[in-house]
Length: 83
Image (tube, rainbow, N blue to C red; front, side):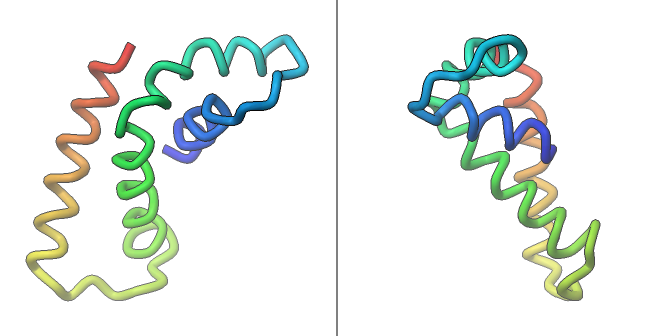
């Protein structure tokens, strides 16, 4: 998820890439970066970091957990369908 977030952020950067893999990443992700997919990935990434991977916060809110699962499922579906 972190690498995908980086690729989408990089594709939005107006600077010209130095070439090689950086140009390939920009070309591959530029269209997806123009959609709301980066926002979806940011939500999933932030929740993952705060509540799962680093457990900065304790997850005790049932509704928050349910909404996070909905975001993850719909987000993964969007990622899978992105071209």
